[in-house]
Amino acid sequence: GQSLEQPSEVTAVEGAIVQINCTYQTSGFYGLSWYQQHDGGAPTFLSYNALDGLEETGRFSSFLSRSDSYGYLLLQELQMKDSASYFCAVRDHGSARQLTFGSGTQLTVLP
Amino acid sequence: GAGVSQSPSNKVTEKGKDVELRCDPISGHTALYWYRQRLGQGLEFLIYFQGNSAPDKSGLPSDRFSAERTGESVSTLTIQRTQQEDSAVYLCASSLEGRLPYEQYFGPGTRLTVT
Image (cartoon, rainbow over all chains, first blue to last red; front, side, top):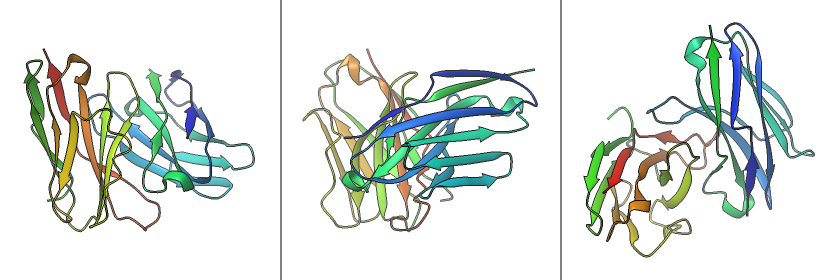
């Protein structure tokens, strides 16, 4: 099976940089995704990493180290609207048809 | 439609009643997923449909849960003899399977409350 660990809560101030870590255990890793979910809203896709390294999309970047079974989401120049839950999710060879989601990290951005 | 739609948006039902939740995926998306999200928790996979293949039902928590999908269109999730522990948001997602980055597009969810 698969399991993922991420911090339950992170707090930061506007303009700061925050890193949300995710460690995973899978039987056959395929890729790591990140989703954002605002309160009462639907999850929306942020990024997908299949290979080691950093992927940058605007203020958000996602990193993967396959050898360490570890990834992170980096949010720069934080804005109040970034307050949300962030979920990492893995696809693995055992269940390539679906994602297994972590329990989520609640990010609170303070003024 | 532009996105995944779900109905109803909210459903309150009495314990023991059956409920049916509906999902309309994005047109052309071959894959459809159902998830359950309890308050403050992550997403729990329930069932996956891909084209005309047999669905992956490995996430269904009990035989009270079932789902159907006709071709690559609408799906319904049925919960029979509802229990209070079934109270959650039920999310549907669709995707173009086989296409990177395997992004799933989620609907707004159905909030189910069992009293």
